[in-house]
Each structure stands twice: as C-alpha cells, then as structure tokens.
Amino acid sequence: MNLLEVKGLTKRFGGVTAVNRVDFSIARGEILGMIGPNGAGKTTLFHLISGFHLGDEGHILFKGEEISSLRPDQICKKGIARTFQIVRPFSHLTVLQNVTIGALNRIPEVNLAQQVALETLRFTGLDKKKNQVGIHLTTPERKRLELTRALATRPELLLLDEVMAGLRPKEIEEMVRLIQDIRGKGITVLVIEHIMKVIMSLSDRIVVLNYGEKIATGTPAEIAKDQKVIKAYLGKEYAFVER
Image (tube, rainbow, N blue to C red; front, top):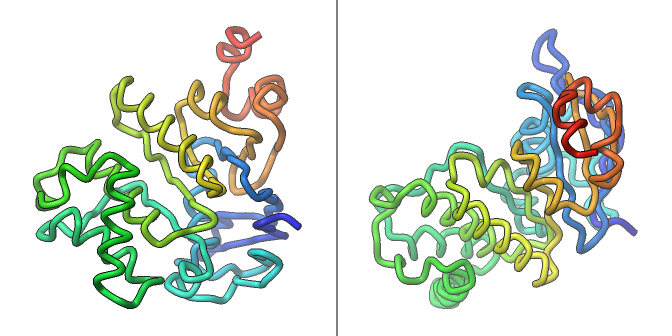
C-alpha cells in the first residue's frame, strides 16, 4: 500500500480550475519531487493535502484512510506536516518556543514537547539558536526553523514547499543533505522546487503539473527527456544540456 494516494483531485476558485483531476501516489520512504511553471497548481495541491483547502472532487488517502474532509490540525495528528513558501515564524517567540508549539500538536504535555523540540533542533542544526527570537533570524535560519517546526510534529509524510528559494549555493547544499537525512529517519518527503539541478538529483520520481493538470510522472531521467515537460517547463536549453 502506498503511503499517500491522490485520486482525481480537483479544486476550483470561481471559474478557474487550479487543480484538475490530478492523480499520483507516494510510496513509503520515497522522495517525490513536484515541478511545474508558476501557477501550475503545486501549492494549491499542498493546501488540499494538508487540509487548508477542501477539494471539489476526488479523494486523498493517507495510509488507506480518506482524509479529504479533515482540518489541518487533524491531518497533522495523522502524520502529515508541511512548510510554506512564505516563512512566518512566531516573530516574538524564541526558536525553542516556535518548535515546541509544533511538537504540542501531537504531544500534549509541555515538558515532553519541549524535549522533542530540543532533539529536533539538534537534528536540524538550530540548537545553538534556541534562545534567539524569531524576528532576529536570517532568511536561511527562518527556513530551517520552519522545517524544524514541521519535523517536531513527528510526521510520516513531510511536504516541503520551496524550502531552498532564496538560499545561496552552500546553503542549498546543506538543505539537500538535511532532506536526505530526514529520509534516512524513515520520513517520506514530497518537495516542490524550482532549482532543477536540486530536484533532479534529490528525487526518486517527479510529478509535473501544468495549468492544474498532471502532464507527466517518472524518474528524473524520464522527465528530462519528456517532450511535454520540455515544452511546458524545462525548455530546449535544459534538454540540450542534460543530454
């Protein structure tokens, strides 16, 4: 059984269909990449999976259970956590307090939640910043804090929405290693990313969206040669270089 199954998922906003009958699955332990032009429906799909939007049609199954109508907090308790494109920590709370709030979603006892938060901060390398207030963090530190807070909920499936946007090359390399370490802990990852070198090297498989529809799915090598993907997103220059 796949960890996550998305079947015929559709979301409309007025007369605009943002996600149109999308199907895909994620196997336990997999890193699945998701790419596509801006406005392709990638973040809307994350909103649907994590309960921030309700779909108009289709089904979302997590470990075989329908979760399409659940609230975000309920879905998080089931074992799905996510990050957001625009990182917004609790600016006047410390890093430790931010991460403890994440842990409290599944661990109701404050002292135990704080212990989990500290362990997670050590894993992501933010433990030295634990007493720093969120508003004083750099952009890379805020992104890492967002990821740490999601991990503190102890997810089985982690949704990462452009966690490398705005990072420098060395910071991107560090984030890639962290995502690989996360998978090493048995956590399945679905990641949206526009940096092709990263997504091609990190992903086991890739799903490609365009105008709200899935146009391809396959290994990075298969996606790099897919003419529909090249035309819609990668471009001829990428195809030439990769071959």
